[in-house]
Amino acid sequence: MKISRSNEFLVLAAILLAGFLSVYALSDRLAEAKPQLPETYEDEDLSLQGEKLKGFAFGFEGLIADWYWMRSLQYIGEKFIKASDRTISLDDLKPLNPRLLYPLLDNASTLDPQFMAVYAYGATVLPAIDAEEAIAIAKKGIENNPDEWRLYHYLGFIYWRLERYEEAAETYEKGSKVEGAAPFMTLMAARMRGDAGSLDTARAIYRQVYEEARDSQTKENARLRLLQMDFFEESEVIRRALEEFKERNGRCAVKWQEVTPLLASKSLPSGRDLRVDPDGNLVDPSDAPYLLTDSEGRCDVTLDRDKTKIPIK
Amino acid sequence: MLRNIFAIARNTFREAVRDRVLYNLVVFVLLIIGCAVFLGDLTAGNEDRTVTNIGLSAMLLFGVFLAIFVGVSLVSKEIEKRTLYTIFSKPIGRGEFIVGKYLGLCLTLLINVAIMGAGISAALVYVGASSLAVSVWGAILLIYLELTIVTGVAILFSSFSTPALSALLAFLVWVIGHFSSSLRDLAEGLGSDAARWVFGFIYYVFPNLSHYEFVTLAARGEVPPASYIGGAALYAIVFNAILLAITIVIFRRRNLK
Image 1 (cartoon, rainbow over the protein chains, first blue to last red):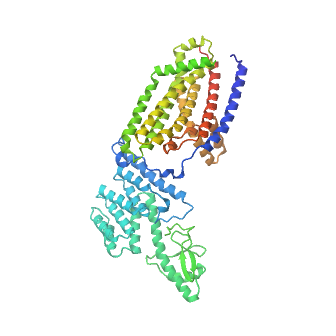
Image 2 (image 1 turned 45 degrees about the vertical axis):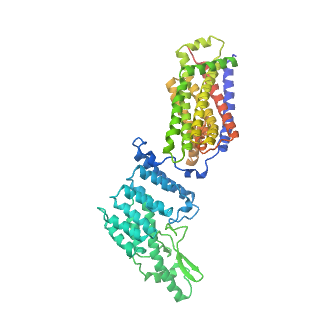
Image 3 (image 1 turned 120 degrees about the vertical axis):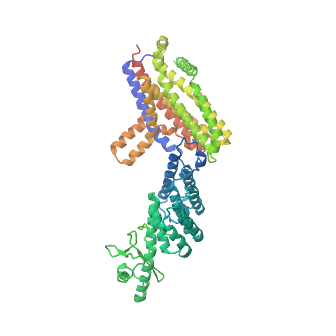
């Protein structure tokens, strides 16, 4: 079949026009009709076990461990982003259903048993998900690195959070005997036996976690915990001032300016000062204004859930 | 006209078989058997998922390399060996030649994909995932449709360029084809009109191969709905018609002396 040159172009132009118009319509329809991966996809069970991967990774075990480590951080991060419309307590992350965090950290620490950040992260985050998994990963760290005193601190910290003070004391004591262990370990071993539930002990532990943390997330968690300790300390003093105000005036204070003169005479056990913002409102350790509450005649102070950065139980 | 096209297609298929193109199947089958037998211990009880992922991904990669490397040499080999002149001394048009060559390679790919698919199904049955062994065929069909488009792209480039450059360009189109959808979404987020136009243009003018991405879903046991397969097939037919029309026009103007 012979087609002249000019007709050939016309035919081609017609094909291209009709073709691309169809492609335009089809492409968007197909994109809309394509079945999507379910939201739970990120919770698919892991395909590979770190233990079995060892020796088959062409020497890239460290690299794969890094991948699992980064994946575990992203995994928790994504869970928080998806739950941003809900209030999630740092003490209980179970509502996020982060069931893959332990296998991810376990794989990372199996492929690289000296990966300290994994153990530190596991010790601070896993207790809020599954305490036994947290203990398991810390114990695994000690088994793999018996000369690393920080791992005893992580395990002792988990026991302390679980209020298993005797086990915490034993762990801190063992850790204090490791060469090069910080003096803090001996101090903690003693405190766990006498003063484990005090605010000072909690503050000392979180300060140590903060100073030892090598990754930003663990550091940030510890910083928030320290702010929480400051809040506990402040709230005790403020509550006493609010009670005093009620005794004198027969009612609860309705604005901070009413209580400020009373608070000025109070001091915090740690030596810090209470702070007010330019509007005269008392602010919490994260600089968000405190809220005054009056619940059936009981005057109290609370954190502003929408503004504060302090973890709320 | 149809007789000429089918004769060329049949000969292209025979030539591919003679060139031992189907030998890649041996490598593929060994890979799949290896996965099924040895990965059972390595995976955390997810052998079926791993076999499906590796099998379908390997099928796509083997298929793309086959489509590109055989596709770009279809025309150049005929010119190099001077067999093209023998063909054109007969009452065969250049358009018929191109369409015949294209269909011949598509037939080769069909046989390849079918055998590879049977291999994956057998491996899945071996690891005890009989239902997946059946459900993966939806994804396999989509892979085949994608390969027909890649073949069209390879033949288009080979009609005016050297085999090496054609292979490179065809591979780049394959990569862009898989990224175009994500790039368009990215451009939407950038808020730049220029980026939106450029990536929108790429999205519609380049073959959008993300329509054929179904491996991850298939590994979960998902089956593409018949209407979706129908739409994807229609998209492939339309795009291949565009590619072949351009190829024929370019090839008709090419000086073969």
